[in-house]
Structure formats: structure tokens, C-alpha cells
Image 1 (cartoon, rainbow, N blue to C red):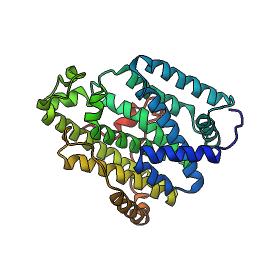
Image 2: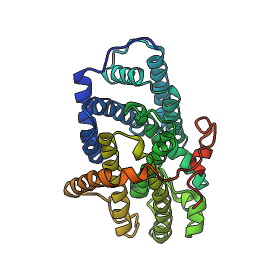
Image 3: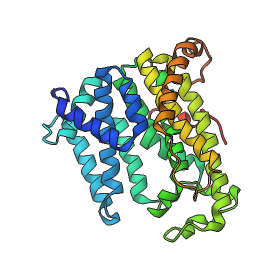
Image 4: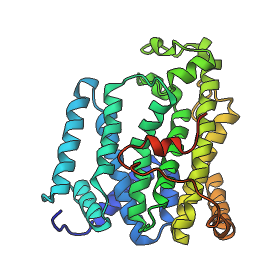
Length: 323
């Protein structure tokens, strides 16, 4: 990639406004990062939001074309072509200075392709692949942004992203349904008592399916907990400031899952939220745990990582075991 100037202050400020508007949990965590890291992190978040919105906010007939535009933009960024869009120019600067591999962003867009195709998720493994693509890759990119040098940290970062995406899906079952999407895997729904729920997409979520959907949602949250634990095992690879920020985001997201459980995992209970006051308390807890727990965690045994997982994430996904 040819040289490109660092992200401008205006670009970072615009990215900061994006994260403040769309994710209070990530916004709080980003403010705990070292300043140089925080700027690049919010630029990365803004691009992920740009890509997500390009698909989600477009009419279905236009989504494939918008995804094609995203792929063309990414090609130009990595070729080193001058970028006249401030968001893309900022991303180009970040991926150059931080050495972010293109394969992570290609995988992110492959996850967007799964949304465009709107294919049903037959198995939990299908869903976990989606979660890896749209969120596990973000964890991998953040390793580069935070200057992580240990390859052993990468799978744990990807697992944390997967855990957060599973939490998002569990929280947003009703909202996704309205948008014509069902992420709950068919095999999980079948075990929960609603094997044919996907055939009802396009109409209201059937009240008679509420109990089965709640059981399936709880199964996703159970799986998320295993991925959160793996994510925790990667924290000792980070600097103390970065570990504090990541731990804060992790606790905020897992607390969203707790709120979903407190609401009985009901798709009709309304959006589960965590108050700002509670998030500040979780940040304080993260500070204490970072100081007290990370030294011991650094000595804990870690799973053996299969070779080639970066090209075939199925081995990475399988590390946490079956539900």
C-alpha cells in the first residue's frame, strides 16, 4: 500500500460522533484507551458502522449493489488510491499505520453478504461463522490497532467479538424480526419447540412461539458466556490501559445479556438496556479486575490453536466446544 497521511483530527472527531451516537458501551470503553489508540479505534468503528448501514439502510433490491460498492472502496483503499471521502481516507491511514490485514475486512464484508442473501441459519455453526465475520474480525483488527504483538492473543480477541455479537442477536430478536431477519438457528429453534418459525417471517412474530424463542435466546446467551471466558483469557496480552477498556466493553455487553435473561429472554419484553450509571460502575469494576486478576490470568493454561485457523475459522470457532 502506498503512503497515506494520518487520520485527520476532523475525521477522528466525526468518527467519535458516530460511536457516541450508535454505541454508548463502545464509546465509554474507547475513552479509556490511550489517546493514539482511541483515535484509530473510533475510525475503525465508524467504518464498520458505514458498512453495516450501507446494507441495512438500503432497499433490499439495492443491497447487493451497495455491497459491491463497499468491496470496490476496500480495493481502492488497499491499492493506496487517494481517498476523497474523509471516512475512507481515515480508514486508509489506520490500516496502513497499524498494518491491518485486508483479509479481516474482506471477511467482514463476507458477513454483510450473508445478510444480503438473507439465508436461514440452519445450525449454530452457521451462526457462529456469521458472528466471526461481522464481529470476530473486528476483535482481530483491534489487536493491530492496540499494538498486540503476540499471535496467541488473536483467537481470544475473535472470541470476544463473537460473544458480543451473540449478545446483540439475543437482545435484538424482535427488532430483527421486524426487518425480516431471523438469526436464531433452525436446529436450536427445533430443540426449543419452534422448528418452523422461519416460515412466519414477513408477518408478526407469533405470540405462541414466545416460549420457544425465549429458550433459543437463552441458548445463544449460554454459548456467548463460553466465548466471553475465552476473550477474558486474552486480556493479559494487552497493555493495562487497553485491557481496562476492553474489559469495560466486555462487562457492559455481558450485562446486556444479563438484562435479557432478567426479562425472561422474551422477544416481547422490549429492548434490554444498561444505564449509564451501571456502565460507570462496570468501568470501576473493570479497573479493579484489571489490577487484581490479570497477573493470575496470564499464568492460566490456554487452548491449543489449530494451524490455519485464519483461513478456515471453523477450527477457531470450535475451540469453545458445543452447546
